[in-house]
Image 1 (cartoon, rainbow, N blue to C red):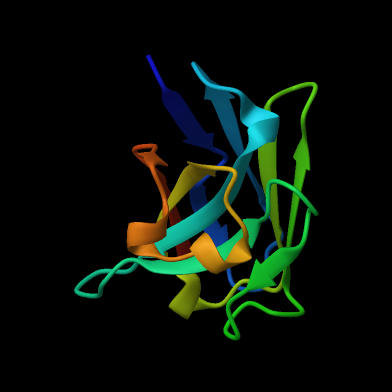
Image 2: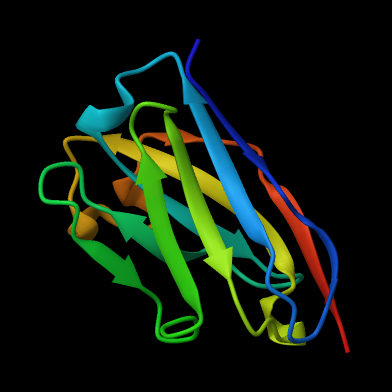
Amino acid sequence: DVQLQASGGGLVQAGGSPRLSCEASGFSFDDHAIGWFRQAPGKEREAVSCIGSEDGRTYYADSVKGRFTVSKDNAKKTMYLQMNGLKPEDTAIYYCASRLRGSIFSCYEYGMDYWGKGTQVTVSS
């Protein structure tokens, strides 16, 4: 069973710096591109950040560039999202997703194969 379990969300004050984790199981983690997506209330799900499976190249949405950092640990089969300087606009459910042998060009809704159920991040003002 393929699973992507996101965790680390919660209520955070503006300016906070939580770190999200995504633990993978049921597939070859290092052979997959993996990324973070988020869905804010009333909005479509959007890509936040991805890591390519082959070259490790990263992608960041303009809205988070310079504030968020994505990384992964293949041994732990875990991807992280270090979030700095959170803003109320960052409030969303954060999902992790993956694609076999994907690149950063797969970092969009229909470019991914597997999805987790997400973790809620709420940023207070």
